[in-house]
Structures are given as structure tokens and as C-alpha cells.
Length: 180
Image (cartoon, rainbow, N blue to C red; front, side, top):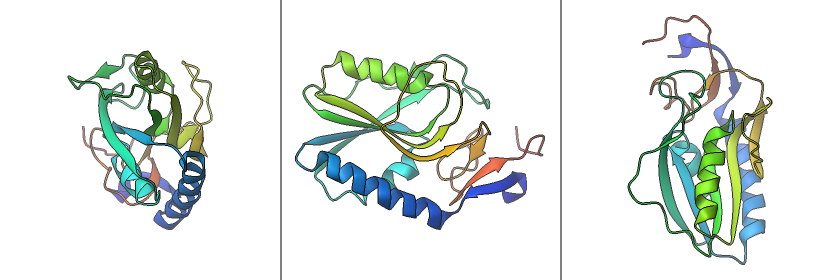
């Protein structure tokens, strides 16, 4: 799998140091609140697990399954919600976790749906944010790392459901012999 990478952007130790910093910020912000964390599956799974173990607060955890990439390397522009029941967020402080802020379409659609349910607050936390103009105006309150407009994998991020289990984040090599 590593042969399919152009280079490693963030190694495991660097990611963990940044998670420590983010967890401290989130803990300070929500110290006197009841927090509900909603993670976007599948990409945020590893990020969520490692980040939440660093937040020493009682919290409620829920997950959403949505899709916008549909197997490609760019958002298809259509966000599909895959679960039957939406989490109960009324009158709750919500921290929405996702792996990457790219076009903004997925997070904007989720945020709209959450806000329709009358939460107390909604903040967004992403592991990665691409330095690009977004198709939807989304602001992340907590960002692990800003990256250039490259297709990255590892640490939960995938290409066609592969590479999620890499312990680091790397740039997928263009025209590599990646499986289809």
C-alpha cells in the first residue's frame, strides 16, 4: 500500500501531538456543558476514537453514515444520508467530527439537517481542511491540519475503501497502480 503513495504528509506521532492540542481546546470549550459528538462515518472513525480518548468529559456519541464521493477522488456533489433515524440533538451542544473538509457539501448538508432539530450549538471539528475555495460555505471550528488540494489517504481516509488502516496520512500517487 505504501508504494501507492507519493509521500507521507503527517506521521503517527505528529497526528497524535495535534490531537492532544485539539482535545485540550475542546475540553476547555465544553467543560461545563453536556456534549454530544456526532462522527461522520466511515472516514472519521480512527480520528474520532483517538480524539475522544483524549477528552476527559462525559459525552454522548452518535454517528452518521453519509456519502458524497461515491468511489471517486472528488465529491460527486450529492450527499446521501444512509441511516434511517437521525440522532436526537434537540437542546444539545453538538460537536460534528469529520475526517476532511473539502468541497464543504457534506458538512453543510449535515449541519443544515442538525440545525433543523434545534440543538443548542453546533461546532465542526475536522482532522484535515483543504486550502481551497469551497462549493458550500462551511467553517470548521477545530482543524487538525490544513493541506493543499491533494488526494490523501490513511488514518481513516480512503480511496475506494482502501488505505484507511495506514497509521499516517499520505498523498496518493497520481497514476499509481491502485486497485480499481
